Amino acid sequence: MRGAGLRRPRGAAEIVSAAVVVLAALVLVVRMVTAAAGAVVRAWPVVTVVAVLMAAAVLWRVRQATLRTREDARRLAALRLALAGLDAMDDRAFEYALRDLLVRDGWPSRRVGGRGDQAADVIGDHPLLGRIVVQAKHTKVGAKVGASVMYKVNGTAGPAHGGRHAVVVTNGTFTRDAMAWGERYGVHWVDRERLRRWAENGEALHALLGLTRRPRPHRFRRAA
Image (cartoon, rainbow, N blue to C red; front, side, top):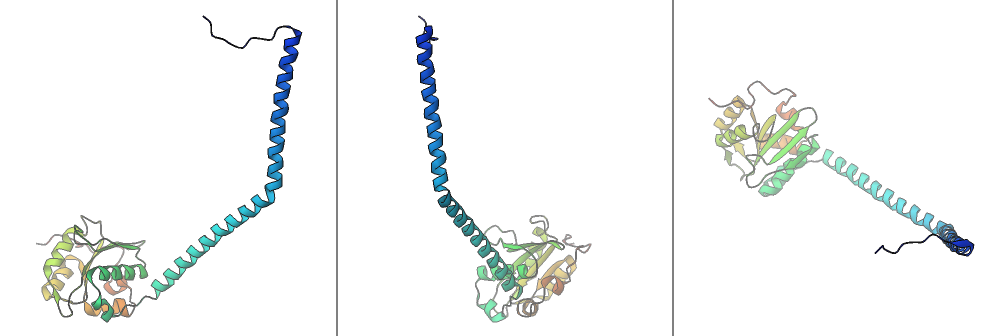
């Protein structure tokens, strides 16, 4: 059995009736469109005001974010940290302080210290000088960092972290063996006196350590 479908009008009466229905539908559509357009026109001042307010709110937030960014940049540019304050920090705060000092010196940095950090607590990337890997050793005043720390940093700074420069920073001191080993194999060290020049006096780390765009030929070479 065929399904029911629309039947073409037959005769003049049916054609006239169909035309009337179509015309009524068109009139209804036109009235609806006209009413909608009228509503938009009547509401246009309100819509305009709302749009202006929303745009102003967005611009205000953008401006506030820009001002905060500039203020942070100015604050970091003038950042000075006293050794006494660094001594009073815990390990985590010390790592964040070193990160801020690197940012001040033009090294966008992040703290990565924690379990499984592979001898890296802070990593920074300089647009010209490349990547620096920092191992932080926050100790009691007078304590010494031994050469074993240098061995670990030398073994992971390049292979594990892609670093061009490796630095061990402490608020204490280093043993003679540690300093000699670091100088020989390209692992920089920042002891208490160098930390004072960096953090308190505002000397840039790359200037303090003589970091250059091209690493020394022996950078991160294996110990004999």
